[in-house]
Each structure stands twice: as C-alpha cells, then as structure tokens.
Image 1 (cartoon, rainbow, N blue to C red):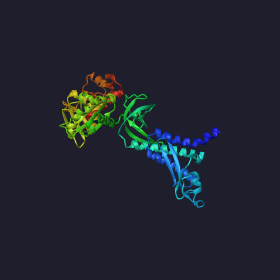
Image 2 (cartoon, rainbow, N blue to C red):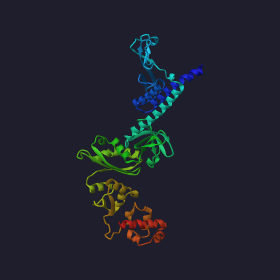
Image 3 (spheres, rainbow, N blue to C red):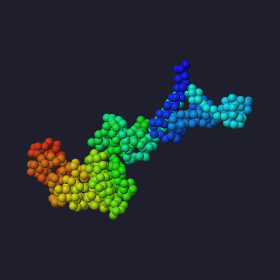
Image 4 (spheres, rainbow, N blue to C red):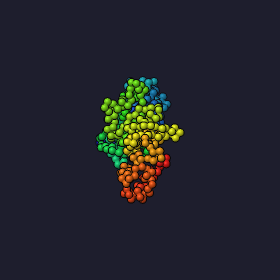
Length: 423
C-alpha cells in the first residue's frame, strides 16, 4: 500500500520539482515563465474537460507550486444544462454549506486527477518549453551586450576554451583560447574580465562568446578607471591593439583648457593606466591626444618616436614620415608593430625615411629593422655592407656564403630591399 501511495503522489511532486528547479536556479523572466507553465496546464485541462475558460491556473514561481481552480454556476436541482459550467444546488451544498443558487462555486482540482501518464507528459512539455525560454532569455540578454564588459569566474578549463560564470546573471559563457592574450593563464575559480564579442546560435542553442583580444576590452577598462569618460568629458575616438604587446588609444576632451585627456587617462604617476596594463598582461598602452589635423595626429600616433617632418598624399591616402636616424627603429617598433598600429589609428599608409635620406634613393640597412630580423642585418653589416643598394649589388648565393645565412634567408633579404627601393 505504501508503494502505491508513493506512485500516486509522484506526478504532482515531479511537476513541482520540474518547475522549481528552473525558478530557483535559472535567471529567467518570471512573468514569461509563469505564462509557459500556465499554458502547459491549460492544455492538460482542455484534454480532460474540453474547455479551460472557467479554470484559474495559479502558478507560484517562487516555490514552484501550482493550483488549479474550477468555477461553475450553482443552479437549481434538475436544471444543469452543461456540467462543464454548472453544478446543481444539492451537490454544491454538500461540498460547501454556504453555497447559494446563482452564485459561483469554486473547487480545487488535484493534479493527480489528470492521471500519471498525462501529468508526466505535461512535465516533459514543461521542461522543454522552459529550456526554450532559457535559450531565448540568454540570447535576448546578451545580444544587447555586445562589447560590454563581463566579470566572471572560471568554472571549467577545457582544451580549446574556458567556461565563465557571469557574476551578474550566473549564466555560463565561453571564452575561446583564440580570444585570449597569449600570456593569459587561468585556473578554475579565477576571476576573468572580458567583453561580449558575439552571440551565436549553434545546435539550436545560444553560445555567448567572450574576448580579451578585442579593442573594446581596453575601451571598457579605461571607462571603468576614468570617470571623465563615463561623464562624457573625455571621448575615446579609436582603439587599436596587438593584444598583450602594444596598444594605441586616441582620446579627445571637449574642454582641453580645463581637462587634459591624456593626463586624465594615465592618472597621477600612472595610477589609472597601471592597473589596466597589468590586467592586459603588460600591454604597452600609448594614450594619444586626438587631432583633426592629419599631420599632427600622425606625429602623435608614432609615439614614442620623434618625427621631424610629415608629407601627406591625400590622393593615395599615404604619408611619408621623416625622422632622425636614431628614431627610425622606435617609429617602426618591434616586428613593425608600432608603425602598423599608427597606420591603423590614422588610416594612412606610412613610409618611414631618415632625415639624411639619400637623394639617389639608397636606404641605410638600419631602416629595415622591424622588416628584417636584427641578427640577419648584423650579419650582413658584418661583411661590410651598410646600405640597400650596396647589398643589392650581390646575389643571394654570395650573401648566403659570406654572411653564413640560408639561401632562402638571403633571397628574402634581397626581395625586401628591392621592394622598399621600388615603392
């Protein structure tokens, strides 16, 4: 008998648990969830009673409970025309002594009266509908957050990505290793800062993809540290990055006489920028004062190099930049990163020349640092050749033999020098 009683109670318990697990653990809209649960039960009611317009379904999303009440009119004995909407007076009086003819009689419907099979089918429908609601809620929540800063905790470390629990929504998001800074290393439980990059639908489920390499991360971190940006006194015009290595940020103040945009972003003794640099794994950040004057802006964009002269060709959207010999390598930067970022920031194709540029079109080998690895240039200079035209007088085989280089390396050097001189 005890076993039979347990089986009879199973449908109601199963439904209550099904609803409760979602209301307690998922960040879902209560009104929409209540509507889904009510719709599932109204379908159950229609299957048994044929109608549902005189039934009230009360869903408590806090504790996961559900109540069903049927409303019928009390009519004199023998005058019941439709049992779905009417109940005779003697029956109603027997159930509730206060019942009177013409009044409405409410009776509670036990969930288990629908039968075990129907209730379990409704449970599965409810689970499916709520899961669909959850997917829709995730997509709706994060589709409007593209580029927003997310702070979360690492819940799983997988081979190709990290799973992050968003501190605000408690939902699980994905941070692919392709969207991480090269030196990033996280363990389970570590706190991560990233921005929402995309919200994708895969296998009929939303996947929120985070990024730590996107330019917007630096933008959001600056806004977090610099109140003048949030207040609208300073505007970030553009951000360009090589994640974990170098970044350039162009900023502008609406009142430069009162607010220094660069100083405000950097902070006293770097107090504001240092935290961001650490967060981005020692990414070197150049904060630059934006200018509408293309020449001035380009000079600032090539920081830390000191530019002597700039010649801009508006038709070709390019610029020739002249610098002292000892500033050329600074302008180009390690692996050409500085000049590439300056080009992205200004939108110009940049050619760098020394102030003492040879009128014959020759270029000192020092100007190729960044395009050609330092040890290769040093090897070539070590055999007595210091300019591009001087080296181009040799063939690849001779360079390889005398400078102890691979044939492919010597051919690459000649091609690089040739391309520069024939621009």
